[in-house]
Every structure is written in structure tokens, then in C-alpha cells.
Length: 563
Image (cartoon, rainbow, N blue to C red):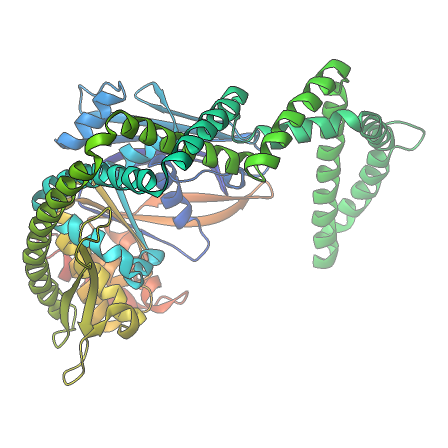
């Protein structure tokens, strides 16, 4: 469960510190106020992809910190132990900093980790469901993973065993195929792989190295041009008989003096002030860059030599460092497989036949378990859809087995969700039949079913109720509240029905201070919630009737609470 969240310099948020409770917390406010930015912060703490674009304008870095209370999840415990992260008190404190220079620092309980590790931890902590998540239902290739997620306790042991066998089978099959093709070609291929692996490996390439070296070389080769430009900028802005900044300041002072007499003058004054401070920032940055500027002839020679090595490898193995490294990983794996096969080539065919037989057997067992789970899932989805006013819809999991002797990394099954939304119609692929509103309800039905089994401590709904209203909106509100009975739920919504069922309510507003836009968050008391719900019901003009309606929504959602 997310307990505390601190945000510094993320987008329009200068500083924000929030405390979260269990059950359901709703975030409301006008479009663009910064609600989704708060969810973005949680996503970054869960391992989301970071970018310099997230950093607030004028700042050098953003900083996020979240405190999570852990549940007794053995999978998470094993992961934390493997990463050397201590968690005896049942709490994780995740800190992440993203700098403009590209540096990304992540610590969990003080232990330094990388983004991949954070993403693995985050999968146990947070599940963010946004409007884009509905697109998963439009991708049949994702449906098998959803089914396996639903029946993970029954499926995972068999799937793990299957994938171990599949790995062995794939290596044996590839080895047998190559050996049977041509013994001489096998030996030639082995020699070539040895040479290429040694050549690429000895270069010790790094993913972003070429871009960084090219950029550094360009700066050194154009040192004089850069130096002249920066000196000209600094001199023009600050030096001489009439520095540009002084001239702009004089004009700004004059216009400021007449700003109070007319709105147009006031607008002109603000624009001129913005321009002045922007030019001042440019002048300062130009001066700083000029101070840092230096030329190193030896370094330029080293860069040229290194880029020559990289260019030679790219000419041979790929048109970029990334492709060369991908090629290296591919041939290294192939070399390891061939060398292993060479040590035991006498019984390769027999071992392959045995591996295929074992794989088929465990694949059949896995398929049977999935089909049983699919029947249970269909029954539960139908029940959930009925409560979401799709009582006449039918849902099923359609299976298509691979051809005999054909295996994939996930088994011998092809799975796709099918649906019939109206009586008399044929069952068909969900991706082709369901409308946008129906997809939202199917996703929410699945999430309601999965919530009790996932073990995720926090589930976030980012405007998943978009495009619905009336009784469907109330049904969605009830479903989200049901999910909150098993997991902490954070929900961004524009529906008063959804906002009313929450136990906790944050109002997000955007304001301008010192000519900068900032986001503020207010925890609403009961009376304040009535006003906010009334605004959500009627817009800017709140009437006595809408307040009464808002109060009624709260009383219906929390009948045990005092009005």
C-alpha cells in the first residue's frame, strides 16, 4: 500500500507531499490541473520510463519519493532478498531522481538499483489501469497472459516446468538441425563464431557510447566557432556602451509604469517581463558555458581512434552499436549452444525425441488446467457484466491448439476472448465486436475478478470511466469500491458517482504564483466534498439543488456516516 508520496519538480508540480490511506482515494479537479501528473509520479516510482521532459522548466532534476507498506508476498520477498534490499520493518522507501544530463538515480531502502530492478519490484506494488489499458483487450496475443494471471496458482508451476523443457528442446532442435545440414559447414560456422565473438567482445562496446563520442568530437572540432558565439552572446547581453539587457530593462521599467492604466498595457508589461527574464537566463547560461569551455587535442585524437573501431564493427555487423550488440548476443548464444552440442553430438537426435515427448505431455497438462480456469473465468465475467448492465452479454475463452509437434514459449494453446453482446448474434472476437464503453466494462469486470488474486498493494484507475454516465456510472462506482475492499485504490475520475463512493477525496487545482503554474492538492472534509461533487454534477454554477443531490450521493455511498 502506498502510504506517502513526495514530488519535487515534476512537470508543473514544484513541491507536493501527500499521505494516502487504505481503501479508496479519489482525485478530482479540472482537466489539466495535474491529476495525471500525480499518477505519473507513482508510475515512475514503480519503474516507469523516465525522461528529461518530466523535469519542471528551469530545474536541473526532479525527485520522487514513496513509502510503501508491504504485504506478505513470497515472490516479492524472494526478489528483495536477491537484490540485497532489507525490509524487516515491512516498509519500502523508493527514491528516484532524474537529471537533465540524463543521469537516473534509484534507491530502495538506501540500496542503489537500476530501472529494470525497480520495474520488477513495482510489479508487486502498483497496478496502473488507464484508458490505454483497454487496448490490451484489443490485442488477442495478450489474452493468454490474462488467463494465466487469473489462474496463476494452478498455471504457474506447470508453465515454469514447461518453459524449462521448452528451452532445452529449442536448443537441442537448433543443434540437431545445424548438425544435420552439413558437418563441414558446422565446423566453418563454429570457427567464424569464435572469431566474431572475440572481435566484438574485446571492443567492450557500450550502448550510448557512439552518440556521446560523436557529440563530444563535434564540440571539440568546432571549439573556435562555439567560443566565438558564446563570447559574442555574453558581450552583446552584458558589455559595451549599451548592453541589450540594460536596454530591455529600461523599456520594461517604462512599460511597467503604465501597466495599471489599461489591460492591454498590463498584458504588454507581462510579456516584456517574461522576455527580459528569459533573455537574462540565456545570458547567464551562455556565460556559464563559456567558463566551462576548454579544448583538449589529445582527447580529440582518442575519440577519433575509438570511433574508427566502432565504425569498423558497424560496417561488419550492423549499422549501429545497438545492432552490433544485438548481433553479439545472438551469436554468443549460438556459439554456446553449438559448443555444448559438440560435446554430446552422438545422442542429439535421441535426446531431442525425448525432449519433444516430455514437452508435449506437460503442454497437454497445462492446456487442460487453462481450459478449466477459462470456464470459471467466463462464469465470473458473465456475473460481473450483469452487474454492469450487460446481463445479456456472453463471454467465453476460445482455444485453438497448435499443430502437433508445434510449440511456443507459452505452451501449445492459442487463446482469444470472444463475446456476444446481444441475443441472436454469433459469438465473435472481443476486439472486433465490443464498443469502447463495452470494453471499459469488460476490463473493469476482469479487474474486479483479478483484484483479490493479484496481491498488488495499490491499484490505480486513471479515468477508466470515461464515456459512461447514468446507471452504468453508478455500477462502475460500485465495482471500484468492491475492488477497494481488497486493495488500496487510487482513482482519477470526472464522475460524481465514482467520487462519492471513495473514503478519501483529494481536490487537485492549478494556480499561478510568481508567474509560474503550480499544482495544489487539498484533502476534502465532508462539507467540502459536497461542494466538489456539486461542481462535478453541474459545472461551474453550483446551485442549492445540485448541493442537495451531491449530499444525497454521499449519504447513499456511506449510509453509516453522518450527513
